Length: 117
Length: 118
Image (cartoon, rainbow over all chains, first blue to last red; front, side, top):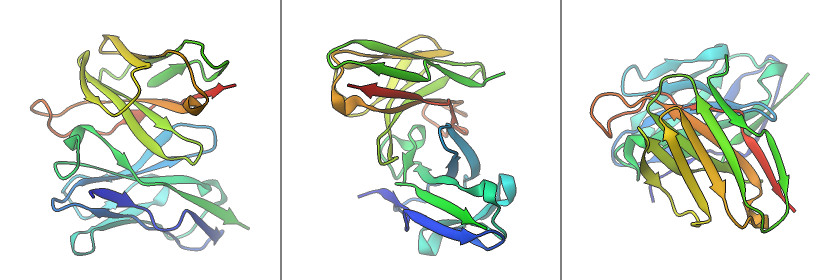
């Protein structure tokens, strides 16, 4: 089935450590890929997106992600975690390889990032 | 200025009642969406409208009826509320680029409406 998978429902890092949140998709056609962040009791905010341009995408708040077609992955990284990065992170896909095409975002199950001092 | 706004933010009601959630966007977008986020944080699209026309209608009970009076508004009416309807409902909007059905730009989300059915 065409889907998006986030490995690890919970990730915990120390402040200042590398953040790595994993996202893999299954599709025969490279999709558009997105990372959204949801802070407690808030809506979703776009961190970054890949739409078939540069494979290394830089987003807000120091986050970046690399599209790797051979690995069907779009992992999110940040070199140094801040306490304020604690939130729920969602990977999402859209495109011709998924039902609804570009009009519909299909979300992964989310990864909760905890940052401890 | 809030780009995508929803009212109310919280909604607590009894089973069997009928309720509505309103959404407005001031971004000039032509496409709007409703998503449901369940208690495990899983997000799933329910409906999408493009220029007041329904373009996505997922497998949602027909107790849920979206209405788009104009392209800046998309409301969600729910009849005969059930316990399982308790969730956070998010509205979003985006702008379709190029031909109809072509790639959409970023979807901007509202703050959500937390619905609790007792």
